[in-house]
Image (cartoon, rainbow, N blue to C red; front, top):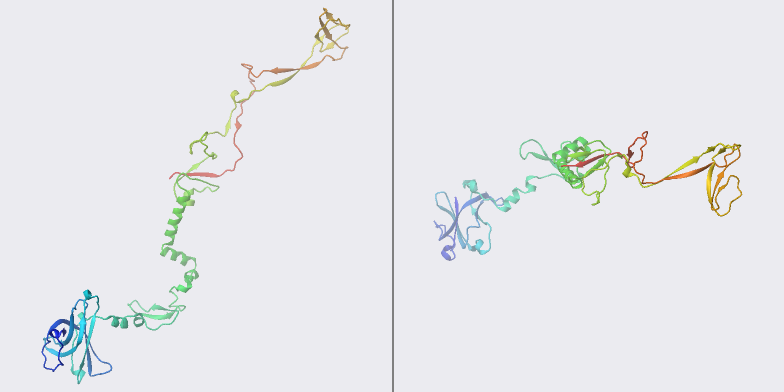
Length: 370
């Protein structure tokens, strides 16, 4: 069955007489989309056809239904109805419903080619809306699969045994938390949280400890195991010192020692004071003298002093004491110049290293090399 519309040859079409066999002027032929019996009038058959947006640019004044043999079985006229196209600024389906009055609808057999049926938006909304597909249910209920068959679902309470497997937005994943740490760990793995977190932490560690960084710790573990990044070289038996551009120029340079042995060049200029006691024993009659020695006196008078001798200008006096006394005993300070050359070293002396280690706290120091 087909549905045709015409423009009446450009003029209004007279009231049908029942003798028509064709349209005055056909402008479009379309398929029948739906045939139903009017629910409010059992003697009325509604035949529906849809004119698509691609057809238009004419005025509809007549229409007709044709059977498969091309015979006109229903004809009617209508007031001028303009069918525009997209070029006229309007698009959309044009739905034509033809109402046929019959004495007995069971005696009428109209077959529709379902492979070419066009569903209208209204029909889709009425038959395929959420309300139509999933009727029933109450607030807080969830859809539960009854079997593995598509569409075999039913509404159940969220706290019921069969509904508790579903997460509720309002519970903010508390269902997983209530299932224990194992369920939480599995859930994180299922959504890739460990991988994402590991990647984030690795990017942070690379930013904090780039290649060349120094890492110190009292732990004996390699930083690669602690931080999860890079290769590290252990620095042993050394302290860190800041570069100053003068003596300590290039970062990474090494030097110094834990102890040194001093040499002559390391000693400052100095003098030594050596106390010395001079003891002289002179044998003289009734005068055993300790520390007896002479002093020279320059003068013009000859003093009356026992044991003095000399000229009018120079006299020598003998310092003496009574037997057994030590009145003439005294000391002398001997100064040794610092520039004495070729001193004789003390063969019994040993050169011991001098420690240069400052107060310290021992830890493990690592340098990132890659």
